[in-house]
Length: 345
Image (cartoon, rainbow, N blue to C red; front, side, top):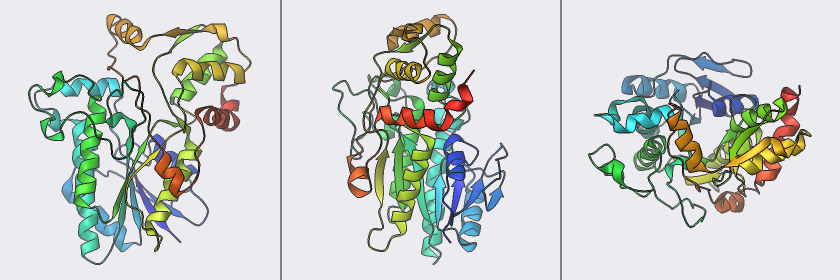
């Protein structure tokens, strides 16, 4: 029976891996502070700190000793992207949570997994990242797995690096640091999976949009930014499909994969789709430009990080190696089918 460890099992991605784990697979959940829901878990390790080298080394050794074949890292800072963005301008941003969890921790984890493999107890590493590692693509071309962010990693945290145009958010930059460290320290046993928004029943963009639509009150959505979100069940299936292929003798996949909807839509178009699905009037939703939203939020005293207009992932590699992924419209339909009853009023 395959045995997998999931770091960050309390988060949105970790939770969907727990809920949609197929029969015959065991998941051991690792969490830092928030106790996880334990239903469906074969075991729980609490107080795990991905930034503590001793803790990481000891935990990976223990997992390998207990038959875990893959560690899936879905650990993320608890703060949102807007709070994280402020860390970019700190005196030493590399000492703060985003860089430590997104950038430093994955390197420790990769080193521990590589050491375990060298000692005859191989455990593979599947590291989860996001499309936020990229800056704005003004040409509206999808990013392939080989594309790189528009700033040298060695400049991150140094004076002046914040001045470049088109930079990813600080959350995205620190995630890219983590990706690099994973692939450099454990290339023979790791895969990086970049995703574009995992939409679950609570707290996600789809959930917020569905809730606002059902209230029947006017609201705005951005009309010049593009998203390629997937429902959480689809994401869980894709991640576990890659994990299985990592162990297949004739495949042993490694490197980077992209997982997202195969097409993209703006938040405004997504809101219209939800309005249609719930039988609400489209006129309740007013389009707004991204720059206007950022400016109005800042004037209201709400920090709002500069978002890119276009960071869509190319999923051709995944579809060539495995199967076709849903379109953006099909992803919304799937979400409404599974979670629509939660928003009926």
